[in-house]
Image (cartoon, rainbow, N blue to C red; front, side, top):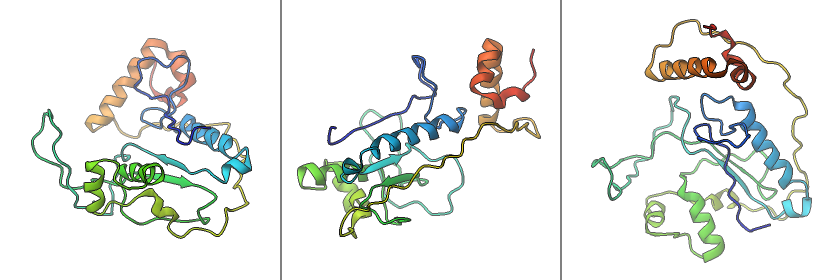
Length: 221
């Protein structure tokens, strides 16, 4: 296999899905396809134990889920890009973004509490293939401001890779629970999702319910 592989999901807002179901865990798409997508990648990577011993899997999101974050963001600024429509620079990293790092070189149950952002992955790649953490000037600036490399997850290396490969759960969810909203949509986002769902049902109710059965509570016109 190539030494570095980027795998992207089928995006919900893609204009053409070529027969694939969106699986990027992005609303209003159901989370099931996204979780199955991640599961299938893990299954492929762990199929060969010898190759898995030399593998590091990083699964990260491009943004947070829109929920309140009780941890204050880091006070690290970002310069205004050339040609931007805004002029005030961001002065913090913003809400945290979830990431998972899986490898037989990481002790089970490890939780990393250091400061990282998406450039932490670029630091790791540059360390591995260029011998320096400074992928470019901006990555260097953020590193000097306190952003650490993903390699710090491996800062306390095991003497040898773990032999165990955690199995995937065998339970299969074969049913769903219909959740009807108790109140009418209130926020702008709720109203937008509600309007999009109704248009989808009007366009092709049968296919819409096959992919999004949770929409069954919306009335048929």
